[in-house]
Length: 153
Image (cartoon, rainbow, N blue to C red):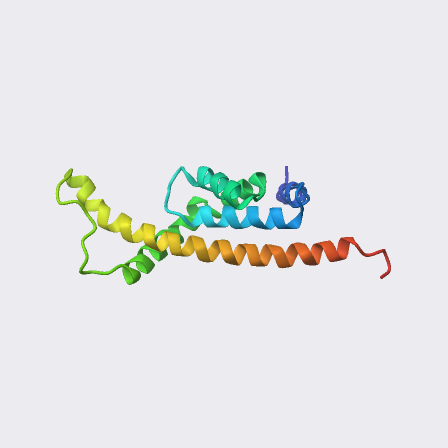
């Protein structure tokens, strides 16, 4: 199959997801849930978070999963992880110690970096979810406007 055929199938699949039951609001909430879950530094758990967020927001579960898979891939995480870490390091106070005093050496070595990355990831998740919801809502409203028109209008 050619690259053009693959893109056409992907576009058709995405169009089918956008036309899923529940209306544009449910689809927009699903897109927001998937985008937010993709920003979290929770390797291997993104789809579980996307599903949980979609259920909490009453969004479309298939749309949340598709959005999460599209945004949360290894190529995007190569950019996201350093950004999340830098943002978390900027936000987290330096004088407060959140870590336990004792534990395995390997765990004590990675916990500070994980805390900062998790804080940065949560901030990016909220921002990405809100931005994705807003953009999806505008796009779907625009799409519904065109679908409601008669040819030649």
